[in-house]
Image (tube, rainbow over all chains, first blue to last red; front, side):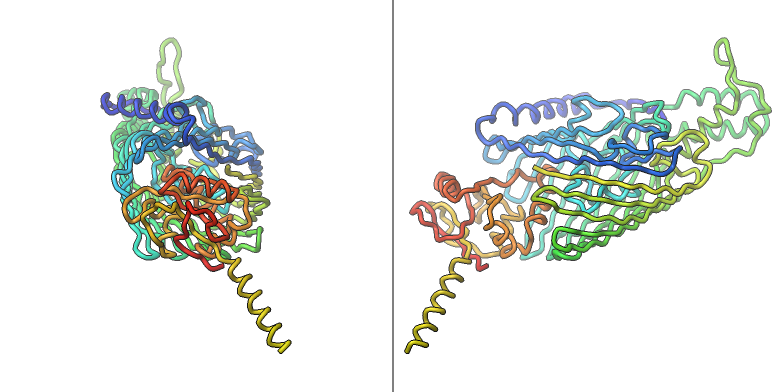
Length: 434
Length: 140
C-alpha cells in the first residue's frame, strides 16, 4: 500500500546527507594514497522453483514476477566496500551493493556510508548509514559466504524491509577472559521501496524513529544475542479507500458496513508502532555447527506481518564439505480479513466519466490487509563446499508449505493466495569474499 | 656409546623440530609492552580488543596465503582458515572494524613492524631483526 511521507526533521536529514556524502568521499579521495582498504563480497546464484504462478523471493523488497520460475536474480549479489582510517580514532566506511531491487541507483546501492569515531578503546560511535541490527544476521545478511546456507532462512529474513538506517549508533564492548560482551544502541530512519505482490506497482515505505538495542555475548564456541527494536511506520491512506467511503455512505446494507470497516482499518494503519524481540544462539566447535534464532513480531496497528518466526540449523564439517539441514517457520497471529456480503449486488462506484465495480474496492482492501500476512514453514537440505580460500559453492533444496491468504513473501497474482501451496526450490550458489 | 650418541642426536633433532614449530608474535622493539599473554593476543586477532594496555591502537597483521597462517590460527584460536575468514568477514562487512592489515612475505612484515611502534604480527622464527622483539611464543 502507498505510504505518505511524514513530517520530517529537516536538520537531522540534512546532517545525515552530509555524513553520507563524507563517508562516500573520504575513503576514495583524502586517503587514497595512505590506507584505503578495498574489500568485497558476492554471490552468483541460481534458484528454480516449482510453482508456475508463484515467484520465489529472497527479500520481499526485490522486484517481483509471479511467472518467473528460475532466476539468477534472487540470490546474485555484488558488494564493494571502501574503508579508511583518516585519523587516529576516526574511520570512514562505504559499501555499495548491487542486487535485485525495485529501484536501482546510487542512493539505493549505498548500503553503508558512515563515519566512525572511537573515543575509548571499548566504545564505538558511528553516524551515517548503517545496517539495522534487528536480527542475528542483519548486519551481514547479504554476505552469503559467512553463512552455511545459500541464503538466510526466508521465514525470518525475507520479510524484513529495513536493511539499513540513516542515523547513529553507539557500541560498548568488553572482554573478560573468554567472555566477550557487546551492547549496542541504534537510532535512525529508513525508507525502503516495496513492490506489490504482482510486481505491477511500487510503494514507498517509511520506518521512523527506529530504535534498536542489542546485547551479544560470545564465549568459547558460542555466540548469543538478544535484541529489541521498535519503529513507527508512516502510512498514507490508499486511493481506493475513497471508493470504500462512497460505498459506506451510499449502501445501508452489509456491503456498506463492510466497506466502512475495511476503510477504518486501512485509515488506522499510519503512525503505528512495530516491535521486534529476538534471541539467537550459535555453536561452532570446528566440526559441528548449530544455529537457532527466534523472534516475536508485534504492532499496535501497522500493516506488517506479526507472529513468531524462527529456525534451527545443524551442519557438520567433513574437511571442505559441510552438509546441513534447516527447519524454519513463521506462525502468524493475524486473522485473515474475509468478506461475506454480496458486493456484486450493489451499483458500481462512479469514477469520473466511468464507474468501477464495487467488488474491485473489496479486492483491493482485502489484498492490502491480508497481503502482509505470513504463515509457512520450510525444510531445507544442502551442502557447502569450500573449494578454495574465500570461495564456497553451495547447493540447497527447500520445500516450503504456505498457508492460504498468507503469501506475503511470495510474488503472486490476485487469486493465487486463496489456496495453500507446496513449493520446492532448488538452488546453487557461488560465494566469494575478497 | 654409539646408542647413547644416536639417542642424543634424535633428541636434539626432535627439540629442533619442536623449536621450528613455535610461532612468534612480534612487535616493534620500541613498543613499551614487554610481553603479552595468549588471551591478550587472541583478543586482538578476534577484534575483541583493539588497543594495547596503554591505550595505543594496535595495527594487527595477518599473513594471508601462507602455510604459517593455518598453524597460527589453529594454535592460537582453535580455528581453521575458513572459520577465521568468515569471522572477520562478518565484522568487516557489518562495518564494525577495518580489515586486518596484510603482509604475506616475512620481509614485508619486518619492514612494516619496524616502521610502526603499535603493530604486531607473527612469524615462524625468532625476530632476526634488531628492530623487532617477540611478545609471545605460541607453541604449535
